[in-house]
Image 1 (spheres, rainbow, N blue to C red):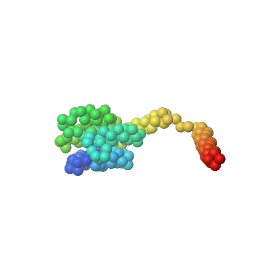
Image 2 (cartoon, helix red, strand yellow):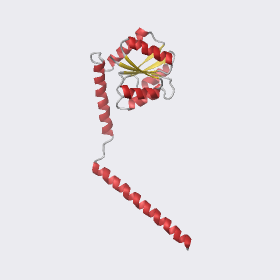
Image 3 (cartoon, rainbow, N blue to C red):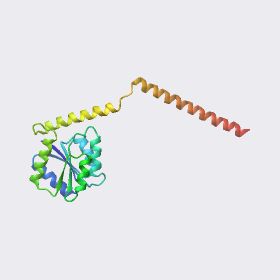
Image 4 (cartoon, rainbow, N blue to C red):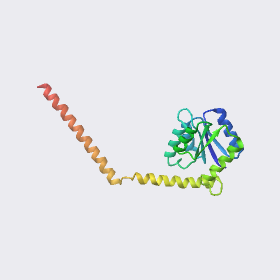
Length: 190
């Protein structure tokens, strides 16, 4: 059973989405704002995230950006929920990293079929959530390797030398400051 995270600040819409997706056979986790969505995504590792565009504490765009920057959530497909007539918002969502958008209001059957198609498209070879998770895990692993390659670890010896140099500099600065203070006292007393 695929797990879907729904981030929607309007309780009625959030409950309707959750009910519809549970009826469609999905496991559902909900969040009331963008910040909560980021936390829930990291905690629950959903197969897909539905983000409302306008939410308190962190907008859908901001949440999407944060999720796409984190290696552990970068591979999770994100779909924006947007009201009709807000095409500019839809475009901005796609640019932020979303794979698609769903216009509100929506028909329950259409929503379920659209989510299933998007899950299949997201890397599930056989349509199963496990296959989609494996595909996302591979993407996440690749993102983590890329991140490590961009930030090479310092060899232990280099790190020790840098630490020693900082300690020596700090000691010299402290000694220099004490000497200046002592000199000022001597000059003041004369």
